[in-house]
Structure formats: C-alpha cells, structure tokens
Length: 382
Figure 1 (cartoon, helix red, strand yellow):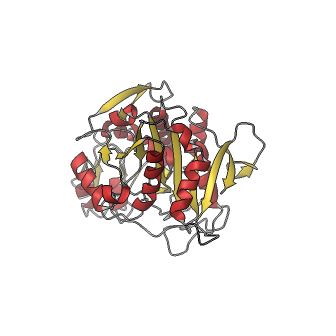
Figure 2: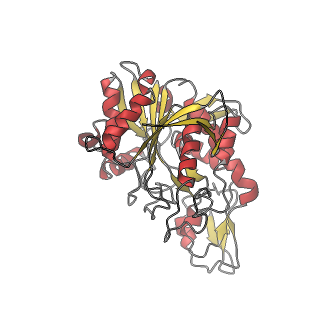
Figure 3: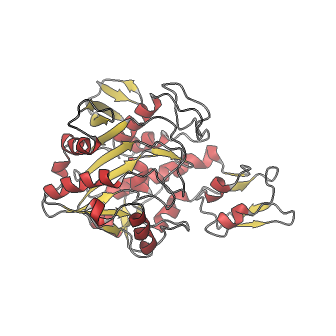
C-alpha cells in the first residue's frame, strides 16, 4: 500500500519507510534490537563504505530537557556503522541563541551531562561548525530564496551521514523531524539566522504588562521598554528566534504568521536541501516517535507528550519519513491534560492542535517541490 499525506494513492516513485512499533511481540527482542533491524531493513549498509567518516547527526538536548533520543538507542546505530567499517562520530551545530550550546565547549559538556559519553555511546562528539560556529562551507543550491546556504564544515566534509531525529512540535516550524534536523541542525549560527530572517517579533501593547521578562530573554538585545512601560522590538536587530514568545506568559509577543511563517519554512527546507548536497545515496534517516512533546528539544524543559509513544521509522528519504511520521501521529488519539488544546480525535492534525497558527505540513509540500524527497511512501512494518 502506498500513502500520500495520509491517503492511499497509486504511485511509481513511492519511497519505502520502515516502521518498528514499540509494542513487543516476543521476549527475545527489545527496542535496541529493533533499531538494528531497522538499520538493516532500510539498507543503510549501502550508504557506508569501510573507512567512511560517518556523521551521526542528532540533537543531544538542552540542559534541563529530557525528551531527546536516549543514548543507548544511539549506540545501536554507532555499533552498526562500526560493523561496516565506518568511523562514526556524534555531531550537531552551535546555536544562535544564548543557552548552553552556543559554543563547542558548552555544547559538548551538555551532551556529556545528558548521557552521550563515549562509555555509553562509543563514539566521540564533534561539533560540526567548530569552536564558535565559524567552521562553514557555502553550498550552492540555486533555489527560490537562496542561491547558496551556509553549512557546517564537518557536515560537508563527512562523506556519509545517519540522521537521528526526535519528532516533536516546534513553536515556529509546527513540528521538527528529519527536515528540520537537517536544516537548523546542519547550519552554522549564521545559517540559522538566514533561515529566521523575515520573522520579526511584534508586541501586542494591550496584552503587555511591562514585566521585562522578554527583555532579559532576548539573545540579541533587540527588546527594550518604551516610555509607557511597554515592550518594543528593534525590527532591524530581531532574528525571529522566538525566545520572547516562549517566555511571555501573557502572549503579548507574536509574528505575522500568515505572511512570514510560510517563508520561514521554505527557507528552512532549502537549507535542508543544501545539507544533503553531495551525499546522494549516502544518507539514512531514523525518526523516533517517542516522547512526542509540543516543544523542541532546544528548550530547557520537556512538556507532557501530546500522543502516546508509537515507534521508530527508518528511510532513505527525509520527506517520506517525515510524512509517515506526521500520518502516524495524526492517526493517534491525543492525550488530554497536555498542551494539545484541540484535534484530539484520530485523523486530526495534532501539531496544529498545539500551534494553531502554523501548518508544519508546508515543510513536506515544499520539500517535494524543490526535489528534497517525495511525500509518497510505502509503510513496511518489521
């Protein structure tokens, strides 16, 4: 059976997406063995040649966050890469905001504190854009928003890559999966700013109570107080990172969602296209549909999951695996008592039930349009 946007259709270009559900059918298997089975079923061994420096691209979580992929799961992928003669290393890029991952020292220490030690994962951590995020390569793509994109140097240098993504919600993208992991996760801080350009925070002065919380939260010092004690945003300095949105308890800050947000998604998807350039047939994707939280793992906390755990997916196509992820999540019944305020019924869009102003499915539509992958897929359970 072939699937497209949740509906079965005939297709000759559908991509195989493999699913291992978390429900155990016998006592001889566990989640870790299922990850290795997915690796094999999806044909990732064809991506890796003996001696290949292999980037294991993942998000190791912000300090205080606990929704990220568990280190023992990552080790299963590392062991499979080593069995093929590959040389695996865990990698991510520095952030543009000021938390504990905006330089390589803090970033590696955060990864270690979150359990990604060599003893646990059996692979070193290498931050792909260097000590301060300035190890970069300009990659030509010639798309609608960018002629070239700024990708981390060690991502470009690695001949192959296995992309491990924790699927969850996101305050600007609607949801984060393989595409966002490629786009934001493989870009330098400058590249991240490129993607956010156009998203300018706005203040609803009727809701602003002048608490100044957003002033201290803004990593670019672009928010100040006006003469009436209301927050004001320097639009020239704002990079649209949304740090202020997440911190404002009165919801006084926002964006022009209708006009600006679709452009943000398109710029993000074009960066994903640049991240995989030159690695044709050398990338595998694994999506973890576990701890499906409403917020990104960049936050220093993890909220309650909006649906129950589903399973793990593997594919060689980032668009197909994200489409399958969304379809599986939407087919679930939403959890009550969470940030999911609507769309609880099976078949309803869960992430717009959290972030009502954002249609994250535009990532999939635009990704297919520019040739990043296909939304047509065949779901194969193992």
